[in-house]
Length: 356
Image (tube, rainbow, N blue to C red; front, side, top):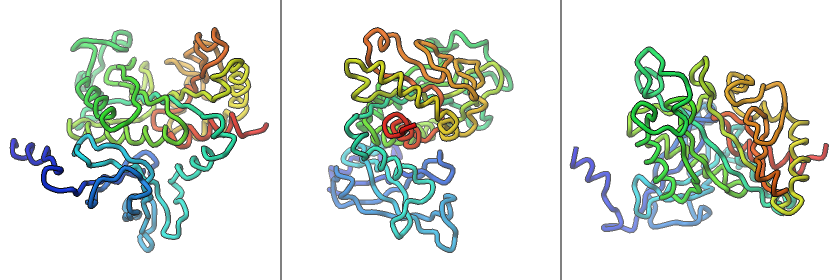
C-alpha cells in the first residue's frame, strides 16, 4: 500500500511538462456528477484553450444508443487537489454534435441570463449554503447514528464539538482545504442541526461563477467521500420524522441592493419573488415538499412569507441589512439537490429582468 500511495502522490512536473485534466460534467439525473481524465501537452489556465471532448451519452441517460455522442465544452478551470502540480479540474457543459445544448445542460441558459446587459450592470453576488448528509456505506444510515437506531434529539449537534456530537469532521476539513487549494471561494463550514449533516458555503461569487464553483466543490466532496468509504447524500429530507432536512439557502444581492437606499430595492425584489413562488419552487430541487413543511426552520411550500431574521420564512432579511438600509437577502427555499445554475439565474431573471 505504501508503494501505491507513493505512485498516487507522484509529482509529474519532475519528469514531464504534460498534465492531467479531469473533465467534469452533470449526468442525466441532474445531480449525478461524471468525470474522466485526459493528458494534455502542458499547463493550461484558460478554458477556451482546452480541447472539446465527447462521451457516451447513452450511458448517462442523456442520449439514445443510436446517436450517443455528447460533446463537452470546457468552461471553468480549478487546480486539482488530488493530483496537484499543474493538473487541473475542468467544469464542462454538454452539447449535441451540432452545437445545441442538450436538455440537461442548464448552464447554457444561465449564461444567457448572466450575460444580459441589465444583469451585468447589477453585478449579482451569490452566497450558496450547501447542506449535505454523510451516510454509512452499507446501511445508507447517517454516520455516528447507532445501527438500526436513533441518536439523542436535535439540539447539541449544530456547530457541536466532541465525539458524541460531531461525526465526519475529518471529511469536512479535508474538503474545506481541498476547495481552497482548488481556487474555489469557499467561505466556511459548520456542523448542522441533524447529526451527520454538514454545510459548506461558497461565495460571495459573481454570476455564473457561483454555479461553476458549487459544482466543482460538489465534485471534490464526492471524491473525498469516495476515498473515505462514506456515501454523500444531497437528499432534502434524508431521515423522516423530527429531523431537519437539507437545503441550499441562496444569499443574493445586486449593486443597487448594496448601495444607499438598497433596502427598498430588496423589498421590491422579494415582492417579485413572491409573485413567481410556484415557478421557483418547481425549479428549486426534487423532493423539496418533504422538507418545506413549515417545521424545522422552513416555510410551508405552498405559502410565500418573508421577514427580518425569520428562519421560518421563505426569504429572510438580516438584521444588519434592515439597520444599514442596504445589503442582501437569503432565499431559504432551494433544496440541497438544486442545480445552482438554475437557482442563481432564475433569481437574477426574476428580480432584474422580469417585469410583472
